[in-house]
Image 1: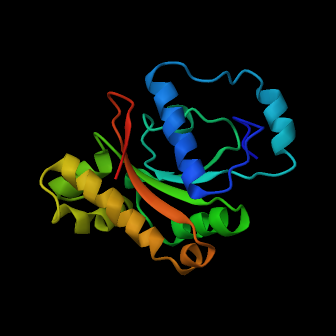
Image 2: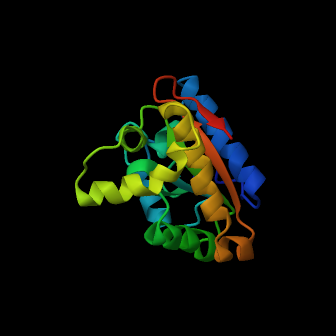
Image 3: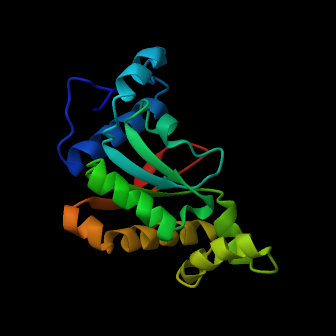
Length: 190
């Protein structure tokens, strides 16, 4: 159920990816689609959801995939946490979106100016719960030069981890990594 284009049924990961690319282009051109009829969307969505994509991104308040992909309620299944890290809870959410909701695409998005990746690169003392996030980012730190490169490496590593999940393999869900530039609004695909 793609409420953005109700006459279009998304049947493949490539179609889903194209919708996200087109949405980001609208966002970049400041010609986002009209979303003024949320009351109608809520009525339709009360019967269930069928998002065409799963998006794992950072909890950073500047990173809002429904906005920069120009999508409406029900279009994308969004999972957010600091540093877009993959853990058991995130994998469970992704499995649910892929297997039970039928989303054919998972997008793992890193972003510019990521505080969690910056903390991982800087090291030092951190509270235990923040340290657990940084520990999941740490393997990427040794594979990149500078924060921005580590952000790219980390997004790819998290996408690889999702791609290796048995349920994701079983249902044939496509997994891609991307990078969101908070200054320009552009999403680049890796």
